[in-house]
Image (cartoon, rainbow over all chains, first blue to last red):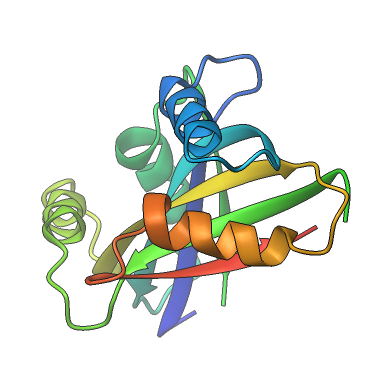
Length: 81
Length: 81
């Protein structure tokens, strides 16, 4: 489990209003592009991991819930490389 | 090319300072987790596309360069579903 990379994607839950996405969608329309029906925004973090025990996955999950995401309105997913 | 989804990932170029990532890495350390060596932050946008011509890819590329990303300090990549 050492020298891995975890990529955490955080996005708003379905049904939660995304003002940034709406604003960007309008801006795209105002720029003259008619190909984008909707925009949802999110953020991601690339974590370089080190650790010699098997609990890295559990710890990353805790870090996501406690620090990176707001579990009330956001979902997160983690991919390991 | 109709009813597609494009996911745009935007990240700082290599070598560009990422204060948000540094702050998060320190916060993780202060919370007692010693498994994260570094954090890089980024953002992504999910675009629902409609369009009946073959220029959707070119237009999405333009939208990224003109609106979503800052090409001076950021790289972007687009995946289509």
